[in-house]
Image (cartoon, rainbow, N blue to C red; front, side):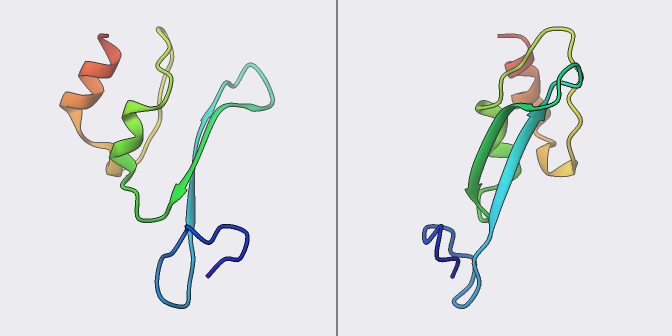
Length: 75
């Protein structure tokens, strides 16, 4: 287990975290970071990331809930 983050249990002898990040390429630092347990599915983060009109969001296939994406974009 990772001592600094005991909540990040992955297996009995291993720990893991995910860092979900939104970058604004006009600057040099992330505008959003969410550190979660590795067991949190990527698609669940779609409800927490800030959506900005006119922006592009690049993500892997773990985020292919198109209904959720559509709802978040058209709030």
